[in-house]
Image (cartoon, rainbow, N blue to C red; front, side, top):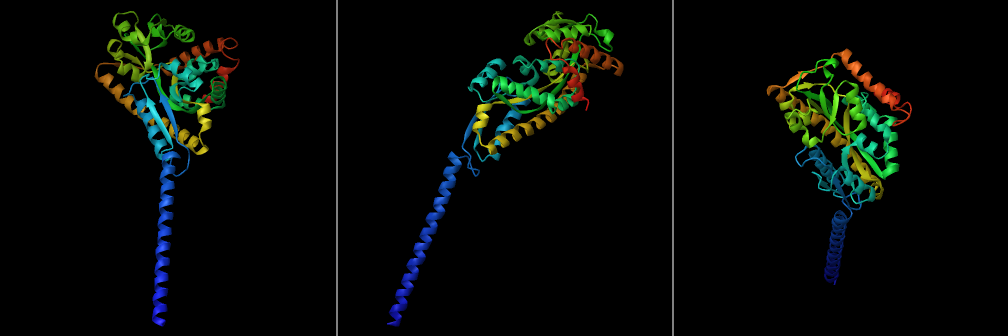
Length: 357
């Protein structure tokens, strides 16, 4: 009898163990299934919903800007556990700059990267145009300005006007240089030199004030215009001068220019606000990290371009400290002459205070 009871107890215990293991197995499978389903529909461990963003630019597919955009996409995917999916569209696949910005205002496109000050000015932030008047002509000065209250005010005005928020403004481009057929060693050498400019009243006025004879020509026609003698010089970033071979026809490169620009990474604000706080932070951090990477890589790459141009016969020239100060002052005073009409009163001094801190 005792033996039978023992056998029954053993059987009961065995059954209990089987049931317990079975329950644990189901529990584990259930958790795994929830986790997998959460990863597919909610974007990973954070449980954030999946958001897909279109990120456009006008830069070529091979451009360093496009590489940096891809870094943003990869970082967001990794840090968000897959909940942020960014599709990169370079080479004006989504339209030219104006078309892409217009699409962003209506929510048709999510993200875009382009020259920030220029397009803030195009959308009514006129004071942003003051940056081209000798006050922000180095990377160091521009980096200070983009961190200032002045710049933050412009970004807020841009948001209020367009519904487009700024994710990053630290993608700092190269300083402007001037390449010319004849050497430009002093300000006196500027006199009468026909220089290609963009079709902008303030840009034309700036170069004329320095003594040049400004001639607006489309970017696509610059090389031919230099070759045919329509103009004697052009301005551009070092990488533009190199990649477009402007130095071949205008081999004297003055390592000075009136301005330095940055790229702004923008997003439709309604789309941004639809994301979780965690996702917004990941996206912002990724854009800013990519900006630091882009600026450093662009500087290193450009140094190589300059070396290649010199090896090919280009001649680098520099203004004296005195001429540099004179040129900058000419442009600052020109900028002040627009205060009260194109720009708000005192904006030049506000910018100068920000960059000289």
